[in-house]
Length: 370
Ligand code: GDP
Image (cartoon, helix red, strand yellow):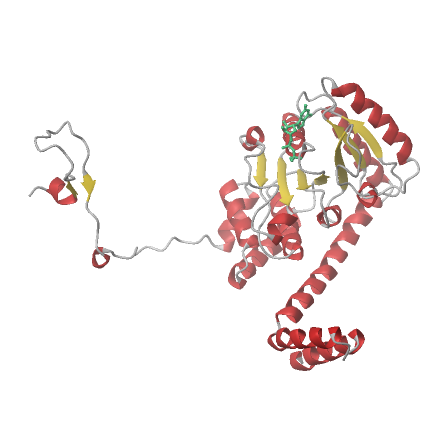
C-alpha cells in the first residue's frame, strides 16, 4: 500500500468503477494511542521583552501585555505589575475621553468618525470599553458586534473590547492599567466607551478627563434611559444623528439643552457643560466637537482642575481597590459564606437585628483574618 492509501480510504458509497476523477476520500482517524502530546510549549515573552515591545508600540506585545493585565491568574497579575511599574513613567501623557449613551445612540459610529478624524490630525487613538453587562452575564452590549471596522484597520488605532468576567471593580482595575499600557505605547488620545445603563458611567467618569453623553434628538430622556444624575457627570451633551430630516430637530434640541444646562451644576469646576450637535455618519460637527474638547483641556490645565482631577482619581482608585479587595475576600471567606445563610434566616424570622448580624459576621471575619 502506498503512503497516500495509508492515510485515506474511499468511502463505500462511491461507485464501484469510480476513477481518480471521483475526488472524495476520507481521512483515516487516529486512535488515542497514536496521539503524541505536543512537545514544544509556546515560549512566553519575558517582562523585558513586553516592556520593550510596548514602548516601541509593537501592537502584538501591547495586546499580550493587556491579556496579562486582564488575566485572573495570580502569576499573570504579578507579571503585569512588573511590566506596569516599568511603564508608569511613560504613561499619563494622553487626553482621556469618556463616552456614554444608550445602545443605539451612535457611540461606536461616533468614536469611529472622531477616531479617524484625530488620526488624520496626526494623533494615535486607543479605544477601550467598560461593559457592565459582560461582568454580570457573559454576554455583552458593546463587544459582540463587529464595531468600528474602518477605525480598526488604521495603523494608528488600537481597539480593545471590554474585559469580561469579574466585578465592575475588577474591570475598573483592568481598564485603568490598560490605559497606562496604551499611553506608554504612544497613544495620545484614549477613548473609553460605556453603555448608559447603570453604574458604569460613574466608573468611566472616574478615569477620564472629559466625559460626554451621546443623545438622540426627539426621544425624551426617560425613553433614552438617561437619568438626570448622568447629565450632571457630563462635560458635553452631544446630540448625534444631526443629519437629513433630523438635522433641524437636533439643532433645536441643542439650543434647548444649552439653555437648560445653565441651571445644572457643571461636572467640572470652571467649565460650563456644552451642548453640541453632530452627525457621526456625515462627519458634520466632528471637528467642532474636538475643538470643544481641546478648549476644555486648555481651560482645565490653566486653572489647575485637570491636574487636581488626575491626582484625585489616582487616590480614589487606590482606595476603591482596597474596598473591592476587602469585599471580595469577605464574601468569599468559607466561614462567612456558611454563616451568611444562617444569619439571613435569623434576620427574616425576627430573631436577630440586622446590626447584631453585621457585628457578628464582621467579628467572625476579622478574628479569622488576624
Ligand atoms: P451604539 O450602540 O451607541 O454604539 O450605536 P451605533 O454606533 O451602533 O449606531 C446605532 C445605529 O445608529 C446604527 O445603525 C448607525 O448607523 C446609526 N447612526 C449612528 N450615528 C448616526 C448618525 O450620525 N446619523 C444617522 N443617521 N445614523 C447614525
